[in-house]
Length: 86
Image (tube, rainbow, N blue to C red):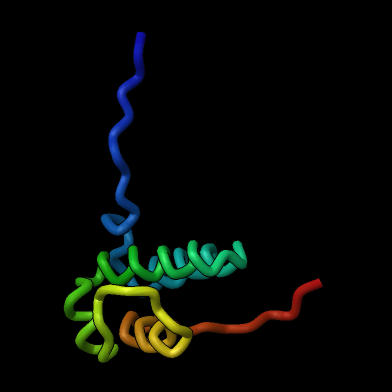
């Protein structure tokens, strides 16, 4: 018997600032810039991409710089933190 899998969109479950924070923190743990940017895009989509881009003062297209990333995070109501590793 073949199992049917449906597409899962994590944006559907990111409906609180706490959920956004957990999602981005998990992405940050990967140290993968592309994945972190993707996670922020998912969060922006979950929160309304156009509105987030407007609040952040950025375009909703393109490859974000750190300045853009920080602006999007601020618009999402989350911040970047640093922890000691090792």
